[in-house]
Length: 98
Image (cartoon, rainbow, N blue to C red; front, side, top):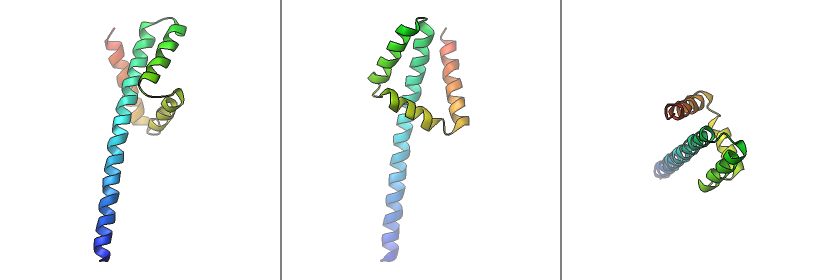
Protein backbone atom coordinates (compact mmCIF):
# COMPACT_ATOMS: atom_id res chain seq x y z
CA UNK A 1 0.00 0.00 0.00
CA UNK A 2 2.75 2.46 0.98
CA UNK A 3 4.68 1.50 -2.15
CA UNK A 4 1.65 2.23 -4.34
CA UNK A 5 1.09 5.63 -2.75
CA UNK A 6 4.77 6.48 -3.10
CA UNK A 7 4.74 5.42 -6.76
CA UNK A 8 1.66 7.54 -7.48
CA UNK A 9 3.22 10.50 -5.69
CA UNK A 10 6.48 10.20 -7.65
CA UNK A 11 4.62 9.90 -10.95
CA UNK A 12 2.53 12.96 -10.11
CA UNK A 13 5.60 15.02 -9.27
CA UNK A 14 7.29 13.87 -12.49
CA UNK A 15 4.30 14.85 -14.62
CA UNK A 16 4.00 18.25 -12.94
CA UNK A 17 7.72 18.88 -13.45
CA UNK A 18 7.52 17.88 -17.10
CA UNK A 19 4.52 20.13 -17.73
CA UNK A 20 6.21 23.01 -15.94
CA UNK A 21 9.38 22.63 -18.02
CA UNK A 22 7.54 22.58 -21.32
CA UNK A 23 5.48 25.59 -20.27
CA UNK A 24 8.67 27.52 -19.45
CA UNK A 25 10.17 26.51 -22.81
CA UNK A 26 7.19 28.06 -24.59
CA UNK A 27 7.49 31.19 -22.48
CA UNK A 28 11.22 31.34 -23.18
CA UNK A 29 10.65 31.06 -26.93
CA UNK A 30 8.02 33.81 -26.83
CA UNK A 31 10.33 36.08 -24.85
CA UNK A 32 13.29 35.56 -27.17
CA UNK A 33 11.16 36.00 -30.29
CA UNK A 34 9.77 39.23 -28.84
CA UNK A 35 13.26 40.40 -27.89
CA UNK A 36 14.47 39.75 -31.45
CA UNK A 37 11.57 41.79 -32.84
CA UNK A 38 12.48 44.61 -30.44
CA UNK A 39 16.04 44.56 -31.77
CA UNK A 40 14.68 44.75 -35.32
CA UNK A 41 12.43 47.70 -34.44
CA UNK A 42 15.36 49.52 -32.83
CA UNK A 43 17.54 48.81 -35.86
CA UNK A 44 14.96 50.03 -38.37
CA UNK A 45 13.75 53.16 -36.59
CA UNK A 46 16.29 55.82 -35.62
CA UNK A 47 13.58 57.91 -33.93
CA UNK A 48 13.56 56.62 -30.35
CA UNK A 49 10.11 58.06 -29.67
CA UNK A 50 8.56 56.16 -32.57
CA UNK A 51 10.58 53.04 -31.80
CA UNK A 52 9.55 53.13 -28.13
CA UNK A 53 5.89 53.27 -29.12
CA UNK A 54 6.36 50.34 -31.50
CA UNK A 55 8.17 48.33 -28.82
CA UNK A 56 5.43 48.98 -26.25
CA UNK A 57 2.81 47.89 -28.79
CA UNK A 58 4.76 44.75 -29.67
CA UNK A 59 5.09 43.81 -26.00
CA UNK A 60 1.35 44.31 -25.54
CA UNK A 61 0.51 42.36 -28.72
CA UNK A 62 2.59 39.43 -27.47
CA UNK A 63 0.54 39.29 -24.28
CA UNK A 64 3.02 40.95 -21.95
CA UNK A 65 2.73 44.00 -19.79
CA UNK A 66 5.92 46.04 -19.53
CA UNK A 67 6.39 44.63 -16.03
CA UNK A 68 5.81 41.00 -17.03
CA UNK A 69 8.32 41.38 -19.88
CA UNK A 70 10.88 42.78 -17.42
CA UNK A 71 10.10 39.90 -15.04
CA UNK A 72 10.76 37.37 -17.82
CA UNK A 73 14.03 39.15 -18.61
CA UNK A 74 15.08 38.88 -14.97
CA UNK A 75 13.99 35.24 -14.71
CA UNK A 76 15.91 34.21 -17.81
CA UNK A 77 19.00 36.19 -16.82
CA UNK A 78 19.29 34.04 -13.69
CA UNK A 79 21.25 31.67 -15.95
CA UNK A 80 23.74 34.27 -17.21
CA UNK A 81 25.78 32.10 -19.57
CA UNK A 82 22.80 30.65 -21.42
CA UNK A 83 21.08 34.04 -21.44
CA UNK A 84 24.12 35.86 -22.83
CA UNK A 85 24.60 33.24 -25.55
CA UNK A 86 20.96 33.49 -26.63
CA UNK A 87 20.93 37.31 -26.62
CA UNK A 88 24.22 37.42 -28.55
CA UNK A 89 22.80 34.96 -31.06
CA UNK A 90 19.70 37.11 -31.55
CA UNK A 91 21.83 40.21 -32.05
CA UNK A 92 23.88 38.36 -34.65
CA UNK A 93 20.72 37.27 -36.49
CA UNK A 94 19.50 40.87 -36.58
CA UNK A 95 22.93 42.13 -37.72
CA UNK A 96 22.97 39.53 -40.49
CA UNK A 97 19.61 40.86 -41.72
CA UNK A 98 21.19 44.21 -42.63
